[in-house]
Amino acid sequence: MSSDDRTAADAMLDSLQQQAFRYFLHETNPANGLVADKTRAGWPCSIAATGLALASYPVGVERGFVSRGEAAARVLTTLRFFRDSPHGPQPDATGYQGFYYHFLDMQTGRRAWRSELSTVDTVLLLAGGLAAARYFDGDAETEVQLRALADELYRRADWQWAQNGGAAVTHGWRPERGFLRYRWQGYDEALLLYLLGLGSPTHALPAESYDAWLSSYTWKRIYGTEFIYAGPLFIHQLSHIWVDFRGIQDRYVRERGLDYFENSRRATLIQREYAIRNPNGFASYDETCWGITASDGPGPSVRKLDGVERRFYDYIARGAPFGPDDGTIAPWGVVASLPFAPDIVMPAIRYMVGHLKPQHEKYGFKATFNPTFRGDGSPDGWISPWHFGLNQGPIVLMVENYRSGLLWRLLRGCPYLVRGLLKAGFRGGWL
Image: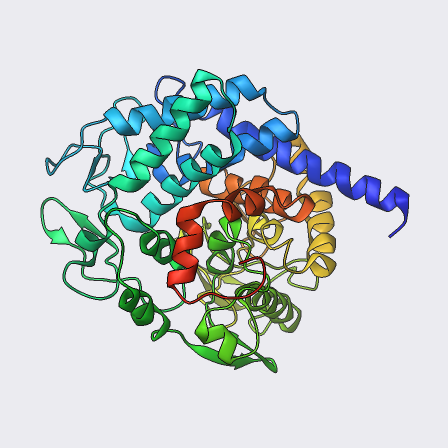
C-alpha cells in the first residue's frame, strides 16, 4: 500500500470512528450516563451499549473526539448511577445480585419492558467499567472515584448465584419466574462472561464451569476450513473487543493448533466465501459485499421477487453459511472484523462507504441494508432507519484495536481478567 493509500485509509477509519463515537455523545442521558439502545424515539437504555460507551470514552480521548475531563466525568456519572440505583428482587429495580436488567428506562434507570436480568449484557457493562478504570489512572478526584466504583461494581456480581445450581451460567433471571431455562453453552459471545466470572475475587465461578462451556463447542469444516463454529459474525467479535487472544490458548484451541483470534479470522473468511458463492442468489453479494450477523432487518414479510418467494426477518441472529439469511448485510459487522482479516475487510469497507455514503449520516453507517428487498420507493433496496448503540461500539473499539491495540493493552493489565484467563487454562503469548 502506498503512502497516499495509507493516508486515505487512515482518514476513512478516523471518520468512521468519530461518527460512531458521536452516538455516545448524543444518545446518552447526561444525568445518569445511560445509553439508548437505538435512535428510535422513546427507546430504552441498553446496558450493553452503555458498557461499550464506557470503553469507547478512552478511544475518544486518544483520538481527540472528547476531552479527558469530559470523558472521565461521563464514566463517573454512569458508574455512580449503577452503584446507587435500586438493587434488589423487586420487579422495577435496576439490578439484582450484581447483575442488571437488559433494558432500563432512560430517565429513571429502572427495568424496562419486563426485560430479563441479563448475565451477558451485564458483563459488557462491567467490562466497559474495568477498561475505563485502566485508562483513567490519574490522581484527579474524578479518576480516583471512577476506578473505585468500577472495582466495586465488578466485585458485586454473584456469579455462583447465576449458575443456579448448574455448571454453566444461566442466561439470566426474571423476578416473576426466576431463572431463564437456557445456559451459556455452545461457542458464543459468552467467552468474556466466563473469563470475568472466573476472575472474580468475591463470587468466582469454579473451574468446572469453564469446562462445561468448552464441552459444548461445535467444530466444523466449511469450505475446506476448520474452526469453532458460530454463524453470526458478532459471536466472533464481542469478546475480542476486550481480550487480545493472539498467541494465548486454552486446552480446546491448543489441541487444535490455533487460537481464538485465528478462529475469528477463519470465520471472517468463511463469511466472505459464502457471499461469493451466494447459494440463495441474493442481490449484491460478492467479495466486497458481505457480513451477516445479529441485526435489524426489513421484515417480517414474504415477497415474491423475480419469481422467487422470499421471507424477510426483522431483528434476528442471521448467520453464514447455514442461515437464517434474507439478504441483509450489516456494515458494522464487517468493520468489527478489521483486526482479523484487514486484507479482505478494507475493500469491503471501501465498497460500503462508497455505496452507502455514511459520511452523510449523523452516526455513520445505519445498522443494516438489504439490496434484495426492493420496493417501498427505494430502487436500491432497504436501509435500516436506525442506529444501534450495540453496533456503534464495536466500530469505535475494533477499529482502534486494529490501529493501536488500545483496548487490548488496557485489559491485559486488568488483574481480574488475567486471573480468569489463567484459571481457564490459557497459556502462552502475552500471559
